[in-house]
Amino acid sequence: MVAVPIAMIVAVVVIDVLAPPHIHLGPLLVAAPAVTASFAGPRTTGLVAALAVAAQAIIGVLRDRDELFSANHQAQILALVLVGGCLVLFCVVRERRARELSQVRYVSETAQRVVLRPLPQRIGPLRVASRYIAAEPEAYIGGDLYAAARTGSGTRLIVGDVRGKGMTAVGDAALLLGAFRGAAHRQATLVELVTYLDGSVCWDLAEPGETDRSGETFITAAILDIPDRGHTVDMIDCGHPPPVLLRDGRATAVPARQPAPPLGLGSMTTRPYAVDTFTFEAGDLLLLYTDGVVEARDAAGTFYPLIERITGWTDSDPESFLRRLRRDLLDHVGGRLGDDAAMIAIGRASTPQT
Image (tube, rainbow, N blue to C red):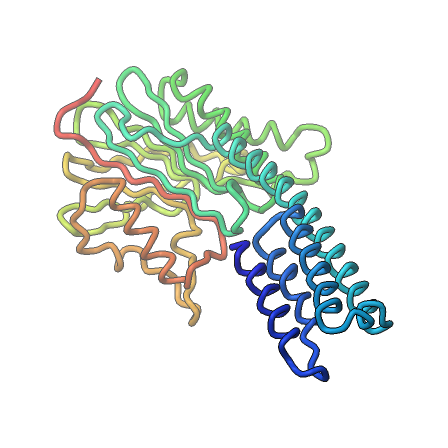
């Protein structure tokens, strides 16, 4: 790449020297350091700028020695020096910003790995794949969440979405994930687990400085208990979009018959949590997701028709299924989502794994 601006300098010098006296191409030398600044650092840019200044002086000597000391030629040399210096300064600032951005990305990626840990491809007898698609290009984590935990007899999963955006939503998501990971294997029943999670969110809102958020902040979530043996799944849906079961190419939503209020609002109702049970057999694919998937709009404002789009898909491998779903979703919206989206695909192996 450096050969391009150097070739430009040589070409300008040769043509200017051979051209008639009334034609001056020296001012074009400024293009060489400008081109270099687009791909190189400050040192290389400064070197090319110095070569351009030297080339301007060579032109003055070869055309007419007296021209080198003329006011016009001196002004051209000074202009090259000033432009070259500005370009070097620009490269220094750009590299500093690039280092800062790299550090921010590193911190963001580390926070995602700590708060939103990637799910393993195998959890007991389950094959699992997960995706998090951030609405902001430079963001790696938001208010959407998911996690899995092993118990003595199966696997518990949670997928949720915090109301709101920004760092407050990230903090609420981290709180719920920490509570889930700490309690999923200790709470005997699914009802006890959800009760504990709701209390954790409510307690956080009651902390000093958080009282103004009470009743305004909540987390929709679906909490599932998938036993290692058997063909059923227990679920408590707390105001979250229903899972989708894909069986032999037929996609079916699995809504809760008695949905619970979102986590953080459980104290507003006296109705006990109801556990829904549905069949999940070997060869089936279970999709958990957040509302960023079904509320994704295309240019005409049409929501993404999840059930309609995945009907007929027969791939039972969770990883390849999510790759295809992610590609299809982004094609629908034209490349960028308006809201964060999290997706988990789960398949059951034919025989239990330990």
